[in-house]
Length: 190
Image (cartoon, rainbow, N blue to C red; front, top):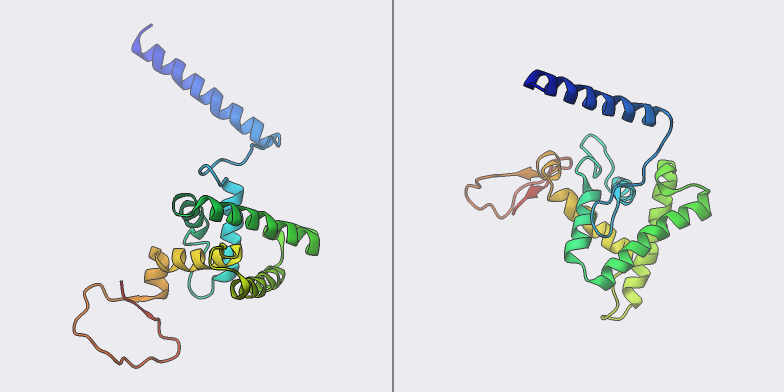
C-alpha cells in the first residue's frame, strides 16, 4: 500500500465515523452527561450557570452565565472546599431541583425567570436565618456558598472586570474621595 492509498483509506474511515455519528444524533440517541471533575458533570454546571444567571442576570452588561460562573463554581468546590462543605454544596444543588419540582412541577433550568427568582429569594431568606442560628463549627448554608461563589466568579472574570467594573490598569495618584454618579461603574482595585 502506498501513501495515497493509506490517506484514501483513512479519509474513508474518518468520513464513515463522522456520518455514523450524525445518524445516531439524528436518531435521538442521547449520551450521559460528561463528567467535569470528580464531583460535577455538565448538567450540574448548566444548573449552576442558571442559578448564577438568576443572581446576576444579563442586562445591558453580560450576566454570570457569559462569564462561565458555573464552571468556576465547580472548580472551586472541587479544589478548595472541605469534604464536608462539598457534600453540603452537592446536596444543596440537588435540593434546588427538588424544590423546583415540588413547587413548580419542573426542574430549575426550565422555570420562568420570575419563578427562578422567587425560589432563590426563598432560599436566600432561609440561608440568612441559618447563618444567624448556626454554630461556628457548622458549615454555611449551601445557597450562601453559591451566592458567594457567583459573585467571586463573576467579578474576577474578564467579563466582570472589564464590562461591569472600571479597571485602571496603571493607577496614577491616590484619590481618597472620588465623586460617584449613579450609573457609573464601580472601580476594581486588585
